[in-house]
Image (spheres, one colour):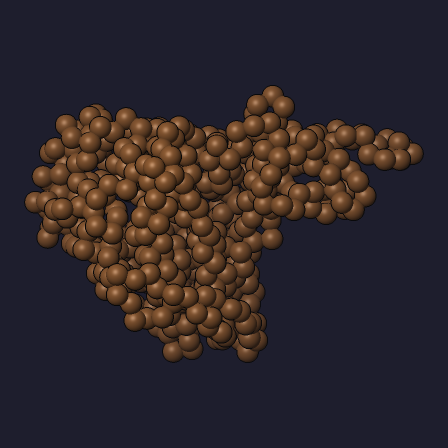
Amino acid sequence: MQGTSISQGLSGIFLPQISNETIPQRVILITNIATQVDDTPQLLAEMVAAQRQKPGYAMDAYFYRSHITYQNELQRLLLRSWIYVAHVSEVSNTGDYVLFEMGEDSIIITRDQQGEIRGLQNICRHRGSRVCEATSGRRKTFVCPYHGWSYNLDGSLRPPRDMEVLEGFDRTEFNLLPVAVEVVNGLIFINADLNAASISNALESIAQPLGAYQLENAKIAHQQTYQVNANWKLCLENYLECYHCATAHRNYARSHTLKELSCNVADINQAMLARTEEETGVPGIASEYERVYQDAEFGCCAGHTRYALYDGYLTGSEDGRAVAPLMGNIRGFDGGAGDFQMGPVSFMLNYPDHCVLYRFIPRGIEQTDMSVVWFVNGDAEEGVDYSIDKLTWLWHTTTLEDEYIIMRNSKGVNSSFFRPGPYHPEHEYLCLKFVEWYVHNISPQSGMEDKQL
């Protein structure tokens, strides 16, 4: 049953009439989303049980507008999973920091005086004020603006003013709370569960293809966050499937074979895989691996596959021509691209000359940050070796198109007339994997152990 309360929001989307030559322009659209006002943990358990009775089907509208579900998603799924938050180049010096925000939570990623990268909860241990506001910068300490409690870069509390009058006060008990941090190929991942299984160990299985790009030596050419007024799962599910690519992404579809059933492009993919090691000079760059969602240790998804571009396309660009110097150890173009998954909500699409990272983070029940990061070779010089406009053209355009269709998806899903249909067994295979993992873990009745973060 739908509730009667209404929440409103603004979202930028672009006009539906587009051409292959122009990047869509954004306009403002007001949306009204019905939310579940009679929600209870018991209702969540009942809806999970009902969803399990319909394997292979998209999720009920309840899961996209339930506040109890949303809180469980944060506490039981996302805060216990590994999430990409930054590249090592963003915290290269002592005191450099960036903020990562999800829901109402904020995490400081910084490099301390010993050179260690830290993840610290952005909450003063006195009365909860945030100790850092700017999204990035360089600091010697983090100081609470409320009562002046001050913290070192490792999170340790400095002697707070006048607290010596409190009998038995031990400032070492009130350091900023940590989150787990692991760095893989220059990519920084965090997990609020300090006892989580290691993402580094999981990603060892894709070390050969991922290592070819030498991301630890790469540079961020551009990054952008697209704020979409839709539930995070709609944004993620959209990325997990290419069933929509032929109809929604004409520029992508004319260059990437992933839009087709595998049997229809088997010849072109086999030809690419036969030449890829010789052309790129990288042994193992085409090795495939998949342990994601329910098949992986919790929150430690790891996957890689390589697929062909159509003839005439060397990379993901408007005209198919190279847009930057070759990455890492790669010595040539093979007409292929590598798809990577690293955790439940972090992905990469890697071409021989640049890499594109996607991350999907909820900021509210009906607001998602779709963050995109473009990497190039660390020695590449903007304006000489690459142009930002040409480098970002395809995936900026495609992301705007995604924003448009996700907003329409959100409107339909939140209609009282919505009835979920079946996923396509091949095109939407990863959506099936995600939903299996989701319904298995979202409810306290699922059997997943509850732990205090």
